Length: 453
Image (cartoon, rainbow, N blue to C red):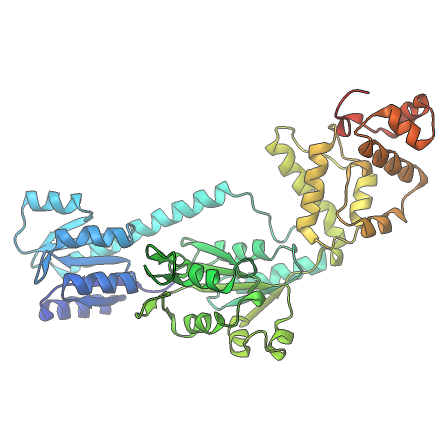
């Protein structure tokens, strides 16, 4: 991780020089300000881990500055120094947001201990928030399965997890790129800091610019207040840009500046702000082709693709489909208080044969729909509804006559909203024969019936 950043606010150059020299020698990065106005500006643009503020300044006191700093970032601990300490003043400083109140001259060794403790407390709070967030999320292990393709990805990703270099995750839509990105973050050195994700394909150029970099009040029509961009939110953590291949060409050079200089500028602002993020990007496109076609900047491509991970399509790892299916069904059954939902052999075979153009996302959707509409018990082939009729027809080529019969009856029942008599007429068989087939094939009418025939 990066070094701890301290902001020193004091109007005496000698005091700042002494403290800066000592703290720098002990592993801190130090920024300085000699007035309240400058302190507010430096705090906003450099976002320290701790701010140390002298009580009396030429343009006011620390009591005026503290609430302004808390408005910018309430999580940053504030330490107030004063040569004229009193209980009343200390109480007032704490009310305004100070975590510590120290009298001058302060022993530098004591100040160092205080700063280390405040930073440790802040990072512990961040870690606890991250742990709670991880507990609240139901994420999928990106390496579920035993196929050579997924085990190779696991080994390659493990070597990259503790790196701070940008990572480009490639793969088809729905193959699990975002899950892998979060895994890289949560097992890496920035796990206690934010993981912020943004889908570049979902936003227009102007919205993407504003979401990523933020804007100042009045930067454009409707900008009634300043807005912090996601880059600032992700400071010290990970920024995940999904579908980066769809990023507007006008935004790309601004992102390149962030990666190369760790600086950016809000819309409508004239000041650069510093930021420290690890970038993970994902795309289903071939960015090499996009650069040759002038749809993506070659310099940005080389910067974001320092490390590359390719997530295989689900059809390239068919032996993993039953493992993924059982995982999703256990998760869905538990969420509905039904326990694990099983798969009958014919359903498992159909899942394995289907080509899954939507990959893992489509698999989850098919299973969730089946769980919601089935009458309970293990899912059969008849419970599965695939997204693409053309691809489903290819699956039907491999079905047995009994399975085809089940599929056709279920299709008619669905069209007739579960009315057995009308379904029998459409099928050209007596109602009693249809009832006999329903029983023999194990078809539950409740999944189709809206009212009793």
